[in-house]
Length: 235
Image 1 (tube, one colour):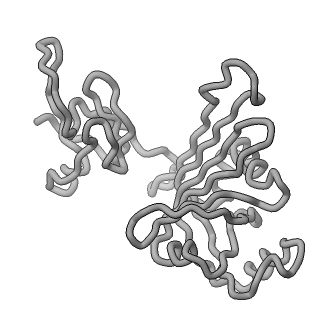
Image 2 (tube, rainbow, N blue to C red; image 1 turned 180 degrees about the horizontal axis):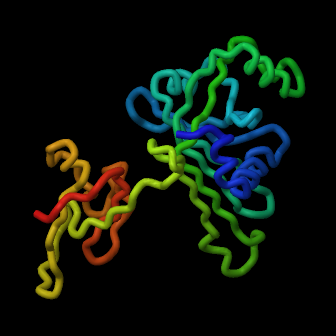
């Protein structure tokens, strides 16, 4: 996880565009996705603020606040633009900030006193992943796919390196294998299973991700895995 300041210093151009999209209507606006108690998603608009190197928001009594207090995982997506389909997206973890001075500074940014109430709690949003999609002006031919820019928070090593990319032949998938004498169905061990001495973790079921480290399949039979560590051997 990383603060907005770390993200901004790591990729200033992407951060500047993300800030512009979040604040395109003046006050910061975004759609906040949280995790309900039953595990389902919840989506609400919020007014995020970027200041002093932090991405923060005041959140009043609401189901989304209860979600964040119980499970800080979040996703934040910008509001649609008027003339172009550019979008900015963040995921990470939110945490409550019991900081009176910071809360007062955030409240002071609102245009009128009735836009903030004293029962709100201050949350800071730490970033794990960021994605920016930029398009040509709406109506321009060949406007898809967009140009994607992605950013990942520094690893625990502190070197700012992205998680290692493993390509596991066969992987640990529950899929229908079509007999083909020209294909090698050797399977390499899942590094997560190797680390925990289990076989409980599976990359995918019929190419549907069920593992948070799964990043897709490179045809015909290679799983792209972002588990932090070394790959296992063959089985």
